[in-house]
Amino acid sequence: MEFELKDLSTGYRTKKGDRVVSQHITARLQAGELTCLLGPNGAGKSTLLRTLAAFQPSLGGEMRLDGKPLEDYTAHELATRIGVVLTERPNIKGMRVRALVAMGRSPYTGFWGTLSETDEAAVTEAIRQVGITALEHRMVHTLSDGERQKVMIAKALAQQTPVIFLDEPTAFLDFPSKVEMMLLLRRLAREMHKTVFLSTHDLELALQTADRLWLLGKDEQQMSDTSSLCIGTPMELAASGALPRFFSGPGIRFDAASLRFTIVN
Image (cartoon, rainbow, N blue to C red; front, side, top):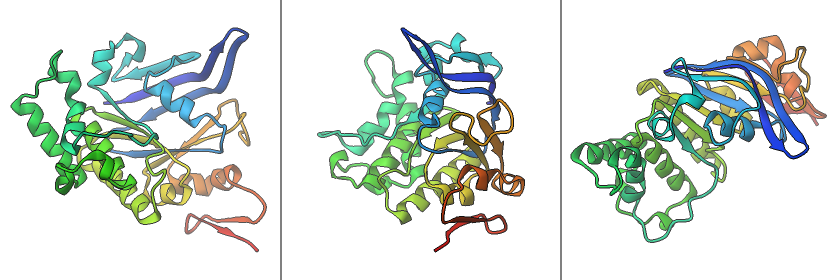
C-alpha cells in the first residue's frame, strides 16, 4: 500500500489565521521500507506525523493512501490501514500484556469487543513477531520502558495495518534497547512488507538502520527551494551534502564515507 503526499502543508488553524509549520511537501512512503523522519527541534516532525495519521487536518495539498484521498476514508477504515505508536509511556495498571496487545483488534471485534479465533491468532502472532512471548502474562505496569514499547508495537501489529507510524519509539530507552528497537522495526518492515515511518532524534541509529531518510528543515532552514523536506537514502544525503547542512554546528564534523558525526575538540 502506497502513501503519497503532494504539495502538503502542515500546521494549525487559529483565530488569527493558519500557522504553517512545514509546506510544499511532495513525497512517497514505500512498503517494505523503514523511513526515519529527522530534523531539529521545532521543525514540525510531530505535527507532520500527526497530520499523516489523520489526527489533525492538513493546511493544504493532498494525502493519498493507496490512491484514495485520506479524508475520504472513514475512521474505521483508517483504523484497519494505519497503526500509530505514540511517544507517551502507557500508564496502565491492572492489565496483562496480552490483553493490551489484544486491544489492537478493536477495529475488527465490533461493539462488544469479543475476540474470535482469528483475533486470538493475530494477537499471538503479533506477540511472537516482536519477541515478547515470555511477557504476555506479565502486568503492563511491571515492565521496563523497552518492554512496554515492544508491547505497544505488538498492539499495532495485531491491528494488522499495512502502515505503521511511530513517534520517537526509542525515547526513554538505553542504547542497547534503542539498537534492538530499530533493528526490530526494520525487520518488520522488510519481512512483513509494511510501511514503517517514524520520527526520531537518534541520528546515528537512523543513519545505520533506515532505508530512507526524510530531513525536515526548520523555517525552510538550509533549503535551496521552497520545500521544507529533503529525502533520500543515507548515502545519497551524505553525498549531496544535505546531512552536514542539516546537522552542522560548532565542534561537529561529518564523515560521509562512514556516515558518522564526530566531536571536534
